[in-house]
Length: 294
Image 1 (cartoon, rainbow, N blue to C red):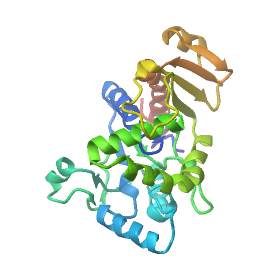
Image 2: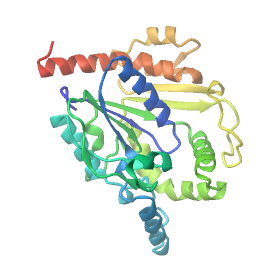
Image 3: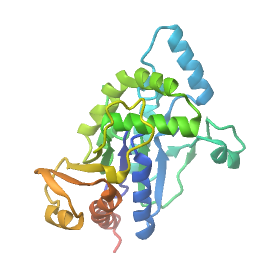
Image 4: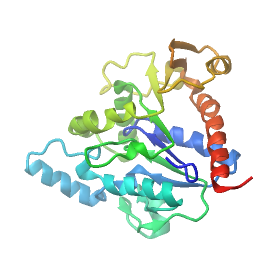
């Protein structure tokens, strides 16, 4: 953690909805005129798309059925922690981009599924913003979770998460239901050991819970809408949280536990704006004082 060079990390598994959370934060950054250094978790995968296919084929031959993007063998955990540490110390660090599709790859003259070259952040950023799989990962070798000043978990209930992943991968990537199901099964060991434990480290968790039947996610034809869901918001440390204000602003919400608000699913962006805008104000005020600015 660093008052001079703060870090915000959004963590959640593939298909969890972290991209929507990122859009909410970007709106706050624009409104508050903040310059954020942004990194995506995919850029810290160890292999590009072709290399990953080969690595998976090699793992299959070696009967390693648990090799996946969720685990340490397929990621650069040490490099990710190094970026967080360096940014907290100096306000800069080394990063790259993963080019998901042809549109992203075109400006670089590269193939989709490849990485750009490593480069330094622009100078004079106000904060570092991370979104991806491992913003709070912790192993016996590294502890990424200790660096961010704000850690946010995005965690749909598991069946909803699978529905979102299946529908996205079929629609955007042309995969079959069987292929996505195989990926889910292969990732399960790493999901349990490297994704779930992160949500013990987060400061705030957002979990979407559908109010429609999702009992068999592998035959679902569509993703439950936000207005067909509840939003469960849990604060690791409720001290200082103005719950009466949040309940008043998030209509039809209620508290299920002393540190947990349940709100209509469609209120997610509003909830984030209400919760995180004051936090970022305080973060930037501390930064100004630490840098000797007035």
